[in-house]
Image (cartoon, rainbow, N blue to C red; front, side, top):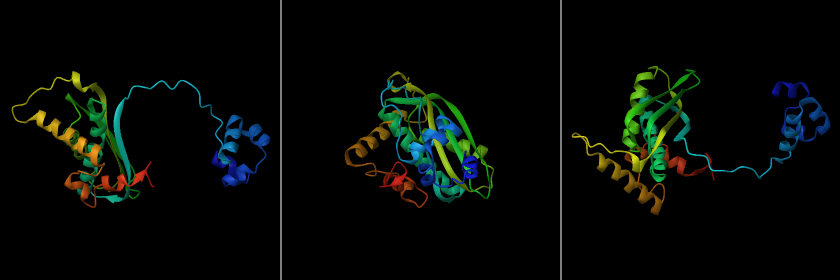
Length: 219
């Protein structure tokens, strides 16, 4: 579409807004009409329809980093993202069996990877998700690229009440669950940054910066 518009001498939204609507419709059909009205800031989509709430498929977060991150730094970023994804799952009373990690490298080393792994017991414990993400990172990282984009997701959801918590002789699982809910309660009462992990206060942490933004932008 950009190439087609350039051939017509159109390179700005203002030029689209000043173009003949009938010609745009003739040239591009309904897309031409949409381009014209969007250039004027007008959306003609109907506001009525089937707004039935869809079942949540997963809880995830991603971030485009403001600079290239090293291997050591990205671990702090992954932990912050896992904290937020698990917080949302806990709030909804959900736990997930499948954990996904996505990594994109900087421009100097194009590429990246997206991999997932399932666990035996559905979880919404931050450190459970973080441990799996770091396993995936060390298994699929190319050993040389700096990182510019990170995403995590918790999917294959189950109702938390229906999850059979299996006690392990070597870890206090109920205690790990309780810590997450206590931290959530403190944040709900005193603000999203009222209690954070120490890693969030490092230069590589992303939670503090994200808390100052709305929709990914500074308010």
